[in-house]
Length: 190
View 1 (cartoon, rainbow, N blue to C red):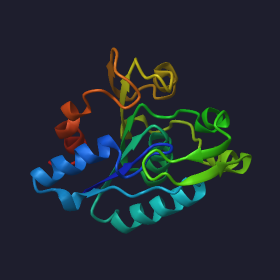
View 2: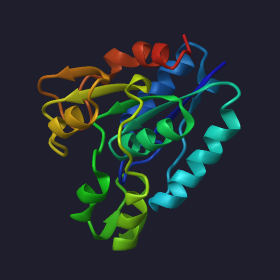
View 3: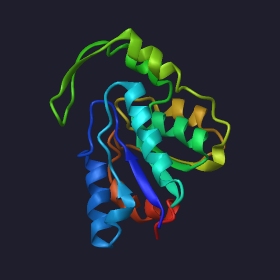
């Protein structure tokens, strides 16, 4: 049975709302063992290293990624590297530039872990900023009401990708629960 790996966003955690909805839904339909939701390190190279190890350990069974915000940025890099499918939800296109304005002290919303985001971390992100060359691997989910990211940047970057674009909403993606079964279908879990 393939697995779905959830990649949370910047200053989020494995307890993000969308991750929790996926966990609950998978538990209800007997697919708990097919969903992997790791806590990602705030340092980009450590997060990517852990995800690469996780993907490589599961490639034989089949892997699909689901990335939200910064997780979508990571998922895009990893999907290209491993040739696996990836759902990107309100992805942080151009993350090195986006996170430049957040340099300095940070606090994780869920874990309350504190750290300092530095220019070195931006340089790490730059290594993972790749051009879109395999649009067939992706499903883009966007809401125009995203208060954190301009959805048009994602539309521009993910040209040729299957896209679900909704009016209104927000960065967390209002009504995500409507898509749970479609996500699992995309990941070949059902």
